[in-house]
Length: 411
Length: 188
Ligand SMILES: [Zn+2]
Image 1 (cartoon, rainbow over the protein chains, first blue to last red):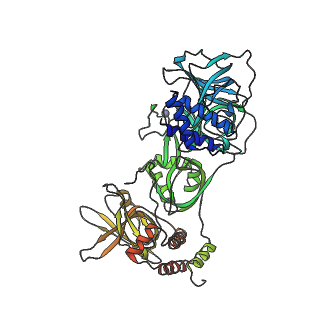
Image 2 (cartoon, rainbow over the protein chains, first blue to last red):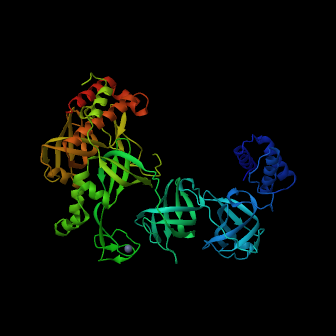
Image 3 (tube, chains in turn green, orange):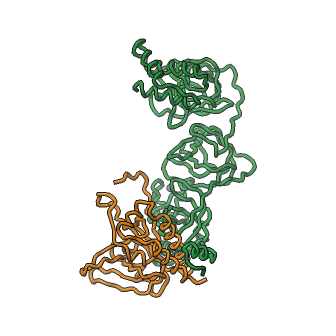
């Protein structure tokens, strides 16, 4: 890290708080500390940041250096802060490396943060469900989310009593990378895409929807479709600008009542220009929680031969408006309505027709290919998961408007 | 070569037959063997896939060893020449099954070639074809009119349209007239 990079970082932090620091001044102060006084760069950064924050009278700048014993709220922690907090261990996760002693989530009434305790400092093991006071921990950033580092200089003390803690619920639309608790309804249950995945789908509340994942782990149960849950301390991940919830750190408890889900739906109009392989009648693995598509030979990549498969209908296609080509995925109900064939009818035809399941593919393709539709649904990973799809009908008013636009005499 | 992190499928451009017939200029976007080949349409957009709906008026099986099918698809402005060969067996079988006359929807790649006499011709290599109804044909005429007018409105402001101007000397008013005439043939 060069001094000009450090200068830039300090300037940005102060600018983010509305100050207009002089970069030359910052750099010369850093240089003086480092070159004249032999201070290491990290320490110099902390000192200069702290000094300038006081000079510009701004607060909430992560100074790093001033190892504070003042108790802070977890919600307000920012990267580069050295902090003291008190919180409850609400999740412990398996450490990913031997250099790590413990990882998990610590929470107070204001919020929750992921933590990592490095093995080198030989920290005392913290227990799930208990409160601890952590002095001189450092906040850094991991995958876009604040993360609390417990290092050899951090003091860990078990609190005298374990106070009750009520997690604060965040509306889905306001979730940020890190840790979040939501009250939400399970509105979609998708086919899992990975051996280690127990369940994936869509959760929704009044403000929006978010993808969720539960990885296979002892004691983890599936969520029930259409049920409402309180989900406490899920991990909020960001990938390609999209958030998702991993529920392995979370406690999820069924809740009474229903939720009117605010669907952040998008609508696309166009012609279906492509019907992809894997459309039509398919067979799914019957093993509880699997639901994978089987091969022609009834083979599941995980559970091998499954003669007791169940049938399903789906359509993977491309809806194209002439400017953008959008991948769309339709589930059984939508396909049934669109193609005018029920699953039962499709199975009946496939089992008696010499072409078998291919016959259903051709029938569906011939019914929908090249036709115009309006599809609405939610978008994930560049694909529209279609909730409803309706044929576009000819509107004489549109013809009149286009004739006008083309600039001729009125027809 | 543009680095492509996420693959985005090329849209199928909407173009009337009389515009496609004038298309002469094609280029490869990149050095690679697999780089896509585009044509520049006279109204000023690159295209390596088109979507047309019209009436299949004629279909012929050709070739002995390498069988392929040719067909003519008519829209209100002219004729598209389509072909499907063994490189797209599905498309060829679909076309083989359709008896003209029929309304058809065709997704395919525009393909330029020069005849031994030196004439430049444009055909459409079929990726998919299906029988549709009159309403879909009418919707396509409206759709293609709208897309063509959008391109004409942007004419001169995009790189592709400046290229079209250079190659074809496109007169936007002429194409507005074509759009108008095409729309006029749609019955209310
Ligand atoms: Zn399985």
